[in-house]
Image 1 (tube, one colour):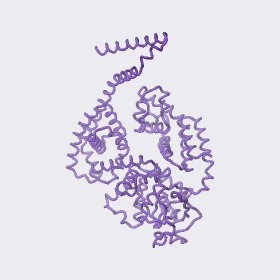
Image 2 (cartoon, rainbow, N blue to C red):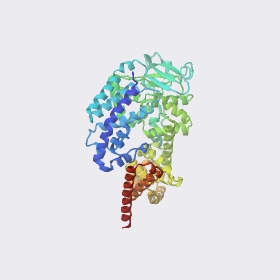
Image 3 (spheres, rainbow, N blue to C red):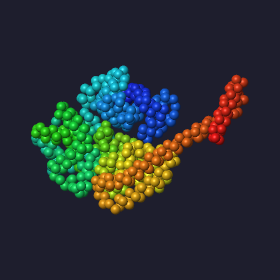
Image 4 (cartoon, rainbow, N blue to C red):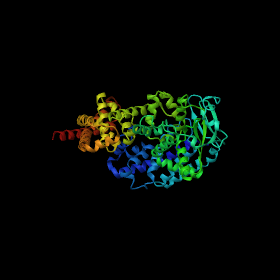
Length: 579
């Protein structure tokens, strides 16, 4: 029997056969002869290795399925909105997320629900483009779906490679006053017939699942998903203001964060739980702190409020302490939340700041420990930390240090992600100046489409027209700094007011970028003839004249004819240049 991972990969292969020619055809219809340049321009940095030119067949074959999906999403309004139903657009982002997830899946198979969902989404999307391929995808979906019964009979398994779990005889949880384990057998904590399996290194433990009354549980304020929301709350109410609340109010406040962070996911999960109940047990510490299952807990609280019926959270109870076992709990949380498909749910800034906090600020984990437990590469963790450091520089610059909610609301992650590798080509002083330019363009809302903004910067760097732009922007930066220093910037609202009151600066910044891009495009156009001649010279130098003696008479005549033609072309070029 093939793994779910293999079947989903086969689905993407079939989907690519349809998407690559379809996407290329639509891009050609929109951009004509410039279509491939637009493809390269719209794709992320990781696609820099795509060929710069070639025949259509060669160019189309160089696209992978993720590139096709990204292009469809980024070019939706300009190209694909007219051809496809709008319901297709969220499917594109969903499939990109699945493709990214399975590329980092490691030794685990893709879980049953995710495999079914991915193939079903492929079928829906392909139905809009090519029904024959959609039929083939349906067969793959059917093969995965037929295994649902087998998978439902197995306990959920999480692969965890962190520190070993404390022995069950540990006194820190079961014997401590207020432990949930002390209430086993009462109406508040009831043991069920269900189990959940966790694997710690080489040790697998099967934990019983309990039904725990909701009022005994509380959210985990160390959850990375809500890090920026907590920073906003503490900015407005004071440091540690959240943890000083009583349990009821504390839960209500954090529930609000979770609802605002992803309302669509909450509504969807709640509807599903009202129909079929809680499918996946959570993970809770003995004191009632939920390590895994905050969204499910939120939905149960909402259902209980709407129905007035007492609800119970199904969870295993870990005999661990949030202080004594802090590192181990974080490793377990990473393994559960990032070892499967769940990173898709994360806001990129929350994820980056969470990583930065655990590895750099608190030194709780090494980069290697974080990567291993989150089931990702060390280089991926390093890149995310590097972006988080730029986010911190940005917040320091705007006078709101560690107020991460501001970075979330400005949505700077993608901008900084593309900026960091691009500016490595610049001198250190120019790198710092470029960061300041990017920061100013963000707060003044002059960047517009931020990903396009940084790609324009990269285009200028490649065309050697960047320095004049840098000089213009440095003058504007000095003006902004002088004005900001005279203002009392204490919140993002103050920054928005500053941007609104200085519309003249916004116009300067926009015009500076527009003029710089005009110069850059002109520079590229002028450079193209020289580039083409340089390539020809390189090819001619590779010809070895010693081989001429081995040519027969016909081949020599053909070569002479070609050289005569080349000579005529050179004479024509020289005449054009002398005019």
